[in-house]
Length: 420
Image (cartoon, rainbow, N blue to C red):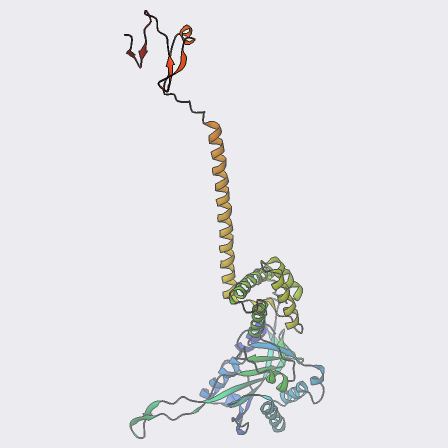
């Protein structure tokens, strides 16, 4: 069954379109004893009861496919005489008019359903005249088939909380009378499944309010099917695999989980149909696919190998759908960490480029700047013929330049005449 199939059935559960023919039930206490049974022509119920029961029926078809709603297939032995599917088919065909079959059904639930408190077993019968639809979903006023089915809901019955209230007979405020209240369904099923707008007698759609504790005994003991795990259970199992691969290192396992979630999210985006009319098929994540994903990640090879092997062992009986394993919050955290890592890498590259540019600029500057002229404490400017007469001599321990002077010769130091 897909979302359209479920929505089609749910849309009919309204006052003006509901066609339930009969409603039966059995109230069971915490000792597994029957307290009371009910059997009603559904459309004859008073409005207050009608809408309450209808709300329970709608709830049994609500939630997410693969999580709250799990489709199970009957094993071949359960379709043989004496099997669960064979029995449910007979119960459906009786339109809930056969008291013996109803008693057997109540016993089947009571003997196999593990619930510590009180609960109410409700079972609805319906015959839906499925109207033909054209390729553009336009309805035609003719029937393809009559989809006859059973809808079962198992509802906890709990005692209302203590409190104060107005006691009208005594005209005072006093303790409120506590009632046993029927709660929304905890589990339920639709038989047969409604697949592609037609009955599929080989399958049953089950409902589970608590996706972490699904009552495996309900699927196996009551319906005779092999139990399936919800998306929540598969996601928790996958998270546990990653955590165990890091031997208790919480920080490392969390970082790895977020990174893998980001990779899964990217893979899911790639597998999403690009065309509007293209139907999305479930993508089952095989051990080979998870292995390729881990190879492309930055996880240590040892941890990646442990995760792949544990994944193959954990999901060897049934490969999970990719979307069921994605934790949106962790994927966002993984994307944030990836962006931060990429930003750090970009900053590192830019810093290196800047360093290289500065080094290159420094080398070019050294090549372009002319050599600085040497500086001297004493600079002499003499006639060429006089230069040959200048000698260096030590006088009183100091190095001196001796310039012989003729009587007619003149000398000037920094423009000052020194001729005596």
